[in-house]
Length: 392
Image (tube, rainbow, N blue to C red; front, top):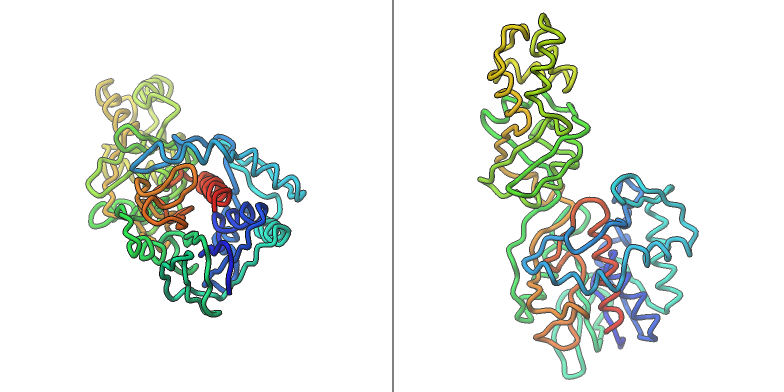
């Protein structure tokens, strides 16, 4: 079989690339080893697909080269994808912070992409794994489950290592190595953090306790969102966000009361409620089980009138920068993305083409560009897919 463009991976980036290339009159084949197209799209956003973020900028992405994503993101914006969603009459809403979700189901986004592929003449094949790839004078010979395919251009859109139960594998990284590309170390991103030893003992029976708003900080990076205690550690949007910046040994701090100066608040409460115990006062600002644990484990619980200003201010300092010693992450099993990957130094930022092998392209999660939680990774998939699709 001969095609102009063979795309390995029928996820967000691969399908977007197929649409753009097909619209240019290229003969396009997309293959995916999974039994269903767009599995990660289908599961995202609790089944409603957080398909973009209206505030997406290059500052919302982690990469060894923070400038690499600028070109693609500037040329295909959230508004371009929103126009496609509206063209297909898919109802959507903004949840918070620019995050857009389908009103109904993520199946609508997959259907839209497949309909656009069909309209552009691109063919999409599931249950079609790739065994090996070799370079030929005309392009590439790719051995697939359906036989050998010859293509002028080869696009690697095979994703990262996150959620192996959905079929994730390191195949894209192996191909990159085969063709001489450098890889940056990979690790799980947007992932819950785990605790161990006494650090876990302090919190483990708080599993299920949630705080609607904290600020999680590592160094100069901070995220304000919800936190959830789990049986193994901590999760919730604030923790998933900071996990991409946290590495073992880093100092992780949680502002449990980000709206207020906790020390000043406690001093005020002593005046207003001198007979109330500290755990009662904290229980009005924090989940009661957490307030009780803080007083059992770290603070001496007494009636408020028995505390001096200095003591209350010191407790306040701790509440506004609570240290939690994480031992690791839940790993790729639950990670939403993979940090690291194909080194962007080996790729063109405008076309995603390899600087080493003409006709070879890398797009989406396999590349060392990782977005924040909240639709940013989909926007990178659409933008990088479009960039390559205009060039293949």
